[in-house]
Image (cartoon, rainbow, N blue to C red; front, side):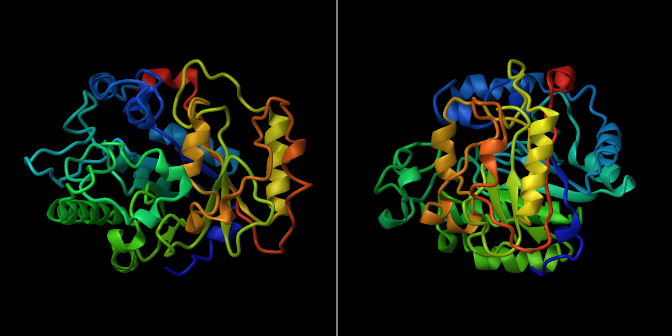
Length: 365
């Protein structure tokens, strides 16, 4: 995909991490994966997801007032819940979305897309490649040498992989067809950014990422892709800390405004304006993209961060070393985060930042 001219100049964006996990303030998807709650407890949250105060035009007005140039919404996280009216069915003929599986009973992506466009904000859609809810997902294993250190503890997790010797390649082909069909639906929104996640559990060859990239180039010609595409992305993504040496080419930094990605009622440890301003200055000085999102709990963060490399195209390699102290460090200071490690590159910079679904928005589940 060709880099769109607007992106390197965008400076600031918004990332909205929203889903059924907001109902009980659980960790997004990871809660059942890591055993913090049962599968049934996690997905029971769908019965409370009403989006009764959902107002994307108010979101868009707030983002525009903040000076954001684009916004990214989690259209489907690892839990498989689609926020749009997907017509792509599971093997039993059912669909799993806010339209069919929650009291919200409606498409939440279309109003968001329309509101952002009315406000002149570039449209970003997050999509998880993996889907721990789909019955055909945990059907194959990657080659033994593809398990990098951050994956070794999860290689027997039943949501990710079948037991050794019980692989079902026909089921995997069926899942890949499901995956592509949902991507085609999202491409119909003509997004400006497709922000991917969750590719780490399979190799690019297993995903057939070259084919996915060709599909997206054809179906979403105006979109830029983040680096979680097995080497086919347009910009790299870091989370929560800056690298000693910025990745080559365009990149972004995703930083939560408190300590969590998704909505957590108890997480009121919001970064100060001074911290955020200093972060923006340091990221701009490093000629990067600064992306801030909405909340991840501290529990299990170190484990999950091993899954998510700072530089998307180099997951699990030496390039993913986190050499800077996160902004949310106990010191409460952002000073440990920039000048020692970051080096200006002279490249145009974009900063992505996101708002948190704060406690005052809790009725919006």
